[in-house]
Image (cartoon, rainbow, N blue to C red; front, side, top):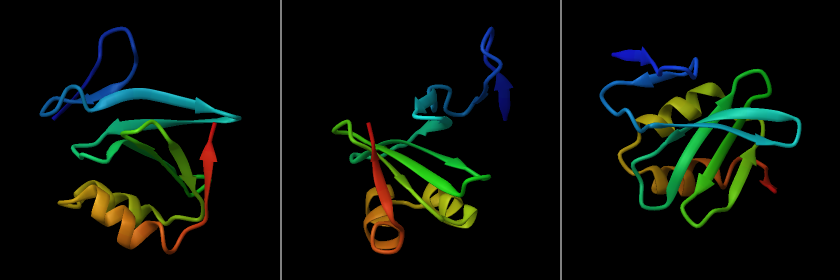
Length: 100
């Protein structure tokens, strides 16, 4: 069940209220990031229009992966091990740039 967080206009998953950690603005485009339950990935978000997957790692580095299908982002959200999924199904196949 989702509800709107007071005063923010953002929707929050009631089952995991701290999941949404806001919009990460880098360069021209902001991508809404969602907190991950992972020891290596802090948050991830997806821009459907640009087909860009943004991942913020626990150590603070953030990367944009280009030309990623929406299904890959959905699979990441559903993966039992987020870090393993990124290492095996995203890093080898999609070009990335570090977000500064």
